Length: 334
Ligand code: IMP
Image (cartoon, rainbow, N blue to C red; front, side, top):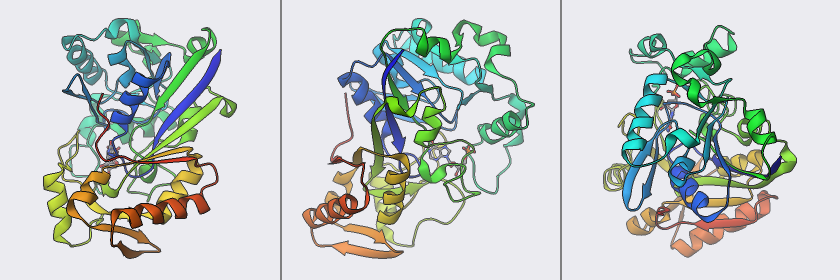
């Protein structure tokens, strides 16, 4: 039976450092299961293990901590990419065979879906066949993991796993982010899955079992895709190059803008965030510019203290479930 579940949700448009937070939390807590709840090969999770940089796309971070790591049915996966990632992790010395589990309902990304996306798309996708896989899932013409011979060794029914074991302690690891959610994002500039707490709970976990929701944001925002997002200001070029704001999956330049406080409040409330982690605060300290956007206008602060104070007040007045705010100056490193 399920003891409790913690959920990690990205509050912006992905790339906020949630892989590093997940790695940190798995290290600090006695979770039994880590579950990826949305997305597929479009995601790139970067984290450090014994000072070595590791990038995964599909397999939850639990794998490097010898924990059961489930790809849940909100995800889609390409079997070739999965097998490549298994080999990559095995070569690094991790025991993937004993720990990787794939729910039988997960949909498979076929090569033809990837081919379909090779042309420049209107919204600027990651060209990983993700959108077509979800399209066919909902069109009821897709192929599920249970019918896919090559990965049978890993296929399970998530219900049996979560309810057939004692004291199951779950960490849900999300991909992409709230601003890319198929419903809540800026349609059509969105991904095709649910990047919210709702997406996590859809794995058969009742809401009463939620312990904490970790909302992850950055001190400024980034977005990758074809809509115009970045205002013209040289400072964003500087940040991009100095702090490596390029996609982990596609290498594309991320567009930047300041933190939008109204969007952040919305995202915290809709996801019931209890613990907020604002990453990359060190970047603002280094450039000595403390800006945010409120009601579509840029608001500037004289010091980091003023900036922090303003955000704390604003959030405590507007987000009733939030109990902790962490401004993280260095990325989580385990
Ligand atoms: P798709 O998910 O490949 O269909 O791409 C849809 C949109 O989501 C595009 O704007 C992508 O750049 C964006 N996107 C998808 N996955 C990620 C991610 O992991 N980080 C940031 N943006 C992403």
